[in-house]
Length: 137
Picture 1: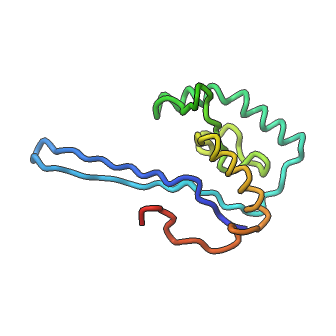
Picture 2: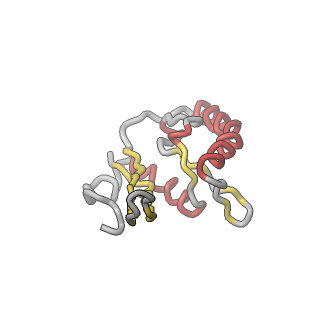
Picture 3: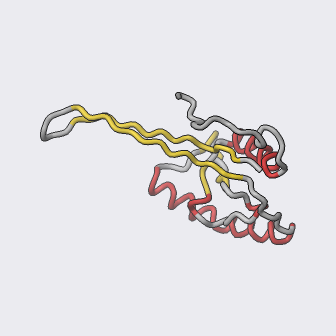
């Protein structure tokens, strides 16, 4: 099985210290990834139960997320999907805030096509990738 990088979040900050008055630059990186292991697939009934749990939780999750990070992203008035890093089909927790990230709709479609290939041990997820997947290195 393989691993896929879902997001590479880079945070940069520039400012000045008051005492002593010096310019300061800082930054950090946070990679979000998922390794497709041999998690068993849920039965269709169980998967639908988990999807309903997510649908009942979605509005409050987006509201809480927006309080912390700003408005939940939208495209033409339609909210971006919330992507479950460990997918619902393989037992990912549908209401764990640490398992959900907002994803642009076209990218979410790519993720949903990549997951079956990853779990199926198909290319490109069955080969070793770069040590650092960051695009600017």
